[in-house]
Length: 406
Image (cartoon, rainbow, N blue to C red):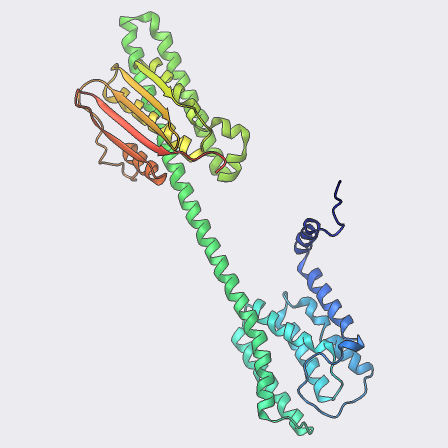
């Protein structure tokens, strides 16, 4: 049996509500004002509303209808000009009470106007409260002079109801400001984090690739005399490294020009982002630079989040760069192991116990292996570096897995 969705089902209702929320403010407030104005002339609702004078009731006429409209129509500008709307509505309510017309639903416009002023009035808020309080006190005096039977407690109770409407609007305004402040601070933190990430990426791209190009160029100069037939191979390696650097730099410049989300969502940009699947390319690049590199991968590779794949890629890149810089021509082994809940990376290089000082960072902080250690720790991982007992240097990183769907 095929079930048919009701015309006013919940998804359809939500879609209609979302479209309505996107409408212009004047249109939405105008609809509210029109609805309240129409309800003001519905007889069953005549007893619902605000009443303070309790003067002898006067029969309705054209003037009373005009005052009812004056208490509702200004709500159309309640968010754009809240103070002006409140002034007109409050004045019409005061005249309506002083003339002793019967209660109408239009008087609810006064409460809505007070709420709107509390929620949307930006300037002269304290002055508006003083003027409103003075106006209400003047109305109480006028009503008393006209013979109102109400006493001072009656006027105080009614004033509390009016003050409550203002306070509700003021509370909403305060919460909105706090939410906007939190959103702004969150955006600033995200921007600062993105700038730091891009700075690390620029360092990684420029330093690693330029170092590799220098090593390759030096090797090509040596080959001019020892093995001229291999010079072309060395120059080709320099060219390939430069192209690789330009590709990654273009990607980072795209991130700077747009936003992190836009760059990540771009399929073409995603293909240029360093990832686990391209770690073997680093080993091949090092081989072409004259560094004997053995690459092994164990376990089943699964798609990981961008930060995990990028961190793993940078660990291998940094380790191979240091190997070419401090132990050129020495055998280097890269092991990438995929576990159930983590990724292990181990890069070892034979040779003397010479290695970069990982305790120091560059002038801006967070550079080299020190920057990698901070990057891995941000992912709840560990990075260990140091000399090996039999000679050489090793880098070992353990990064918790974060599947792509997370």
